[in-house]
Length: 393
Ligand SMILES: *Cc1c(COP(=O)(O)O)cnc(C)c1O
Image (cartoon, rainbow, N blue to C red; front, side, top):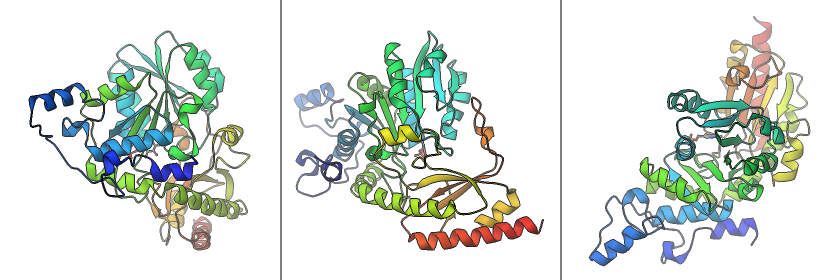
């Protein structure tokens, strides 16, 4: 089945939906049983999508987990209250005191925070590595390295990793490979086909797709699913049925939304490439983007998120750029239908293993589903305000 059809069918087995098109929202804490035999059956099978206790999910959760597994290719999918919880839940399932973690240098900022604070306090050591390291990751492996964590393209700076090369090295050392696959969503990169053991999604972003719910997923291959699932249960991670329903609803239109986000973003990129203020654009589909060859080899498309580096501009000029925008709002959680912008004036502060080669400010744009002509006009006015602020300093 082609992916566009798969996304329509995924998780919609009659077992979960009953007579309706969509799975109902089933909210539950207590699941009630009539007989000792029923309770015993549920207890024995509580890890296999049999209703047992609200924390372990209802058919709303089971249907959505099935959908993510079908699309990403995992054996099982655990749900978390947000993407950050999925990351901590996955890492804590496979790491213990005395272990060593290899973390990509351009990881989502809260992921770095988790490593530098909580994991460090637990006696888990993190080494950050260059996102472009590829098979060279072998030189960083220690006897106690248990997990290699990837994020590709990485947050803000969009380097694309050589996922199969890293996975091949990890397999030789029996190291678990986790990938934050949020940028690609389940549609643009198939993690398990490239050797990843655990794939993480901030479903908050493109899957929910409407900026109105938070949700995380972590899918695992058959070998690692029992450990991941059990750790999630023990730590009490669960997601609200209402939010899971919104994610399942958003999922059905993910394919068409991504296509439009991609097309709109490429139009905006083309315009930005002509702007004299722009020093560099980080978009995986551009030949100059680090890891572009891997992107062309492994991904089936791009989306609405990319970054622009300007030649110059201080906080005041950036404020002039952003404040007064009509379509682009300032905010973090991209992946909704609307355009967003966020500025970063010190990218180097977010990395320790690599050198960020640009001096000017970075603007991360999320291109929404508005008409790109309106977005370009908005950006043009922003550049005018920006240039005015530069000359009046
Ligand atoms: C947003 C994001 C997360 C965290 O997701 P939340 O649902 O906001 O906790 C994790 N990884 C990446 C790459 C993200 O962009």
